[in-house]
Amino acid sequence: MKKLFLIILTAGLLFTVHAQTSPSDLKSKFTGNLEDFLGDINKNLPDSAVSGGTWSDAYIGQLIGLPPHFGIGLSCGFSRFPIDGLMDAAEQVGASLDTADWLGGDSIPIINPAIELRIGGFALPFDAGIRFSMLSSNDFFGLDIEYLSFSVDARYAIIEENLVLPDLSVGLGWYHISGNIGYEFNASDLADSAGFTIPSTADQTENLSIDFKTNVFEARVQVSKSLLIFTPYLGLTGYYAMSESSYDIVDESKTLTDSYFGSRIYGGLSFNIAFVKLDLSGNYSFTTGNWGGNLGARFQL
Image 1 (cartoon, one colour):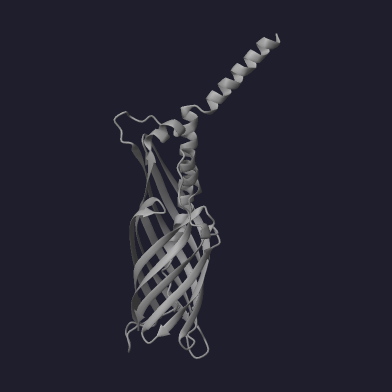
Image 2: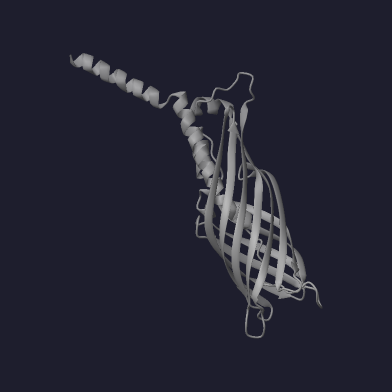
């Protein structure tokens, strides 16, 4: 009787182990990790979309006047971007991803180099700006990343700076970013460790393609004060973001759509040398806990 019991118990354990490691379970675990990464993208992508895009002066003045007030410049922002879900998927099949230790070891910095233009208003105390950014990298922390980003915004001056008072403005902005992340997996690893059925005629590698996009609508308030050759500033924003991301690998695909309300704080300092301004700023998202920075240089009248 004891032998029969042991045989039944052993068979049950073997069946359980087999069930736990069946191809369908392995695939579900792998695709579940990828779906978690889509959620990470949708939540954190708005932080990348709005990185940069701020000038030290809360209001730059009127376009029609002497001198006319406008500016053009270059900047490069970055924001922390968690990749936990993608790391878990890679580890399941024996691969590994590079990360930035100074960001916590589970994230990479998404950079946002851009050209910016801002012009003063006329009649009413407002200004408006546009920003355009594009990036294509075939090996950024082991990932192939490409995206297009642009934004438009307008600000209205509630208080105009004088000898005592600072500039204080409120504004609205629309930010958009869309692009793709690519990563190559070993085909045999996907078959053995993730339960995929790989055609015999397939290449030795299989490409994971992740598309993403977000639209961010932001309201902000900013204060600044010119002090000799320095202009310190501080701003607070609230935003609503609509994000969509999807993955495609072998015979599996998934699309995830999310929307979020959020808020962030930013601030910094510009060094003003004649008509040139060098701007350094930082920002923090209360919604995601992400932080980032921006370095810019511009010609401004």
